[in-house]
Length: 314
Image 1 (tube, rainbow, N blue to C red):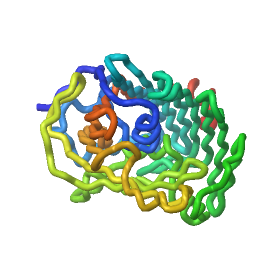
Image 2: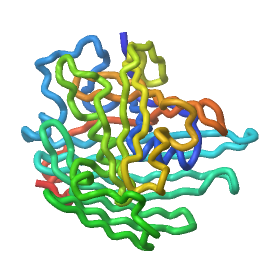
Image 3: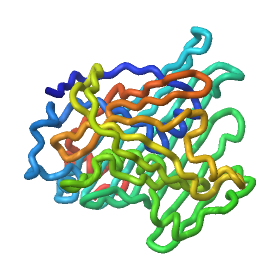
Image 4: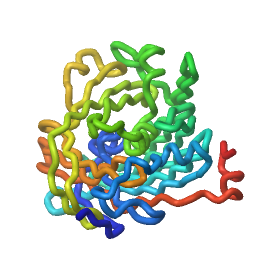
């Protein structure tokens, strides 16, 4: 029987894998605690409304999520943490996030990014309207403002990008995507239809310049045991399609940089209608095998007074 405890430990790599594997929605290991989520995948009821459907019907909900990572180079640790505070109202949502990696000169990059996304709550998904990212890596320290409307998008970057890739993303391509952190969260929250592939996807992501699809292939079930959850999880293999916004010729590389083979992700379907990745694993060409797990996740109601004070709250 699957079980929950509340907190996971982690071991993982550094900057680039954190940026891609976390921010591009492939680095999501979640432990469940807090508000009445399932303690067993075997008790899922098809009559239970999905979490997003409940939010849309008038139950504002907050999700608190934190992912931790650690890697060792010559026994010297490099650490990372990504935190997400997701406030979901019936009509809109706001995600505040911070990703920070502390590493070793010449081996890892000291990386600190603050992100915010907001957009529209739907009964089966979240959809980006605005995305702001501020990177503080001691080099470019770039800030990106992205707005996606119903038939157009705007992007401003300071300092500006040298180019927007070859080819650059088209308007129609961008309209079918979400920003990185919205894509990450909505992938976990979107309900899977009865009989549909539980791995879901593809996950379509646009960060203001690079447009990427993550494709997931169902590889069956595997018993997964972590500090926070154990049980039969669905194994998904993730490969990357670089659609637009990359250097010329780079789109021919169909994998995450630094990863040898597909990234492996294990999903645990929960009673509140979400399909949660509980473990991420990959083989890297420099570090070896890495594992990403989450340190915190909980769902809790948003009280009316708090909802009124939340930016965009109804």
